[in-house]
Length: 171
Image 1 (tube, helix red, strand yellow):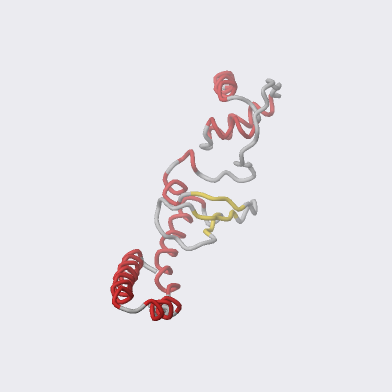
Image 2: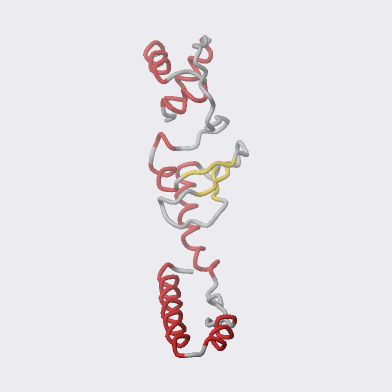
């Protein structure tokens, strides 16, 4: 239901409630109880507009934009509403489901989906851990592919400072 329809419905309920209160003030106490027990609003009916047709065009346009960036690997699992809403997506290559903002997934390099990398919140241990040379090279490759320093730090379980230090060493 559109936002405009919700506000119209809310205003209609307020008007009917005010009208019912005025009628109650004119009526005797026993009749007031009877009026309060009966509902003063008619039952709400959903609009007959088919919402699937409404979203088809927007979904197709968004999928086309995703295909240009990801080559058909990422598909949205819910209807596209706008660029700033958070939607559930699925990567067909790594079979991972993730949430992302459509505007960011398509335009921002540091917000793009990287296959086989867990973007979840991993706890960083307070102890510093040793990073092998292979991990350093993998960290550098992921950074070059567009992953942010914060995400790298979370995935490898090290601090942001250590990530930048390793990136300077490798580069």
